[in-house]
Image (cartoon, rainbow, N blue to C red):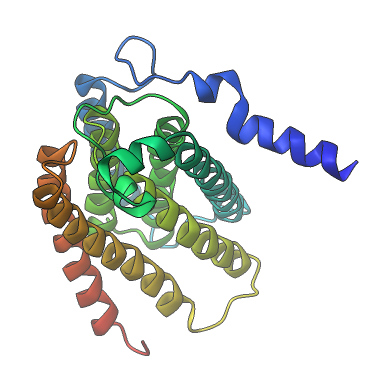
Length: 273
C-alpha cells in the first residue's frame, strides 16, 4: 500500500506526461505573453488602489472582517509551495541523473549546472514545468495584498512592489530560460512553506509575538540566498564561457539587491525584532 502511494505521488510529481513534455509557449501556456504580464500587473495595482479608494469613500474606519479567508489562503499557499518544492527537487534530481554525461563533458558539477544553464537551453521539460507553476502561484500571492487593504485600510506599497516584481521575475525565468532559477525556486518554496504554515497558525490564534520577526527573517534569507546565487552565476558566466539568460539575470540581480535592502530596513526598524 505504501509503495503504491509513493509510486502514485512520483507519477504526479515527476513522470506525468504534462510534466515531461511541458514546453513554455506563447500559444500553449496560459499567461505566457508580454501583454498579459503587463496587464496582470496593471490590474493588480489598479485593483489595490480602487479597493482602498472605496473603503475611504464609504468611510470604513474599522477593519473588514474576513472570517476564515486569510487562514484558508495561508493554508493554500503553504500546500502549493510544498507541492512545488517536492516536484522541483524530484525533477532536479531526475535531470541530474539524465544529464550526467553532459556534466562530465563540460567538467561541471550539478550545482554549477543549475546555477549556470548552458547557452541555448530551452524552457521545456520537468524543471520548467515546476517553474511555470511557481509563476502561476504568484497570482495567488496577490490575494494577500487585498487582505491587507481590507484589514488595515491602507495600501501596503512595499508588498505591492514586491509581489509585482516577483511576478515579472518568474516570467523572465521562463521567457529567457534564466540560469539559477532551480535553486531559487527550491529555496523560496521551502521558506514559503514554513512562513505560510506559521501564518496559518497565527490565523488560528496559535502564533506568538515573534511572528513578524519570523516572517521577515524568512523573506530576508530568501533574498540573501538569491543574491549569493547571483554572484555564483556571474562567476560561472565568465569561467564557463556564458550562462543562459544573462540579460534577465542583470535585471533580477538589481531587483534582488533592492528588495534585500528594503527588507533589511523594515526588519531593523520594527520594534522587538
